[in-house]
Image (cartoon, rainbow, N blue to C red; front, side):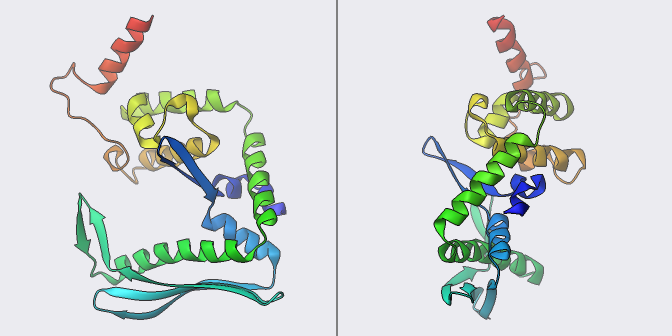
Length: 223
């Protein structure tokens, strides 16, 4: 796939999250859509069938018109969002739309991947990984070190906070993790979000008792 040679697609082509000490990854909805478009003659999307009693009945589908292969998923999305450990009901139409669209995108991805042959998907994933690897002049280790330094100097975010956010030690960071960190960095730099939106910021007991000061002490002890 020619589109997999674009760095912009490769950066959003894979999702990745930690679970049980390991990283789970796979093709994202963006990559699934790109594969479907390259495959050609395919119809896919999500439809709201009904909305009542604080929930929406939805249908996601992918239909290979050439081979007459179709996959559908019917599901229910409750109009609620978990925040601060509790569920809050959604009433704003925009919030409801965003919730249903987000849940629908996941099902559309699943439908597309169920219709497209597995070897085609695997080839696209590998191509995107290669694009990411070749898309930067500096080695991954150097890029991550500079990114951590930028977080520390500009936003007072320590390496430990970043490791907790990613879900593993710095030594295990991947290209996808770097892309996630870069996205967070841009959001903070452009004042689109606060560091508390991403990181668990502990409250220091005193001015000298802070994560950054403790990190400096650890580095000094190692030297």
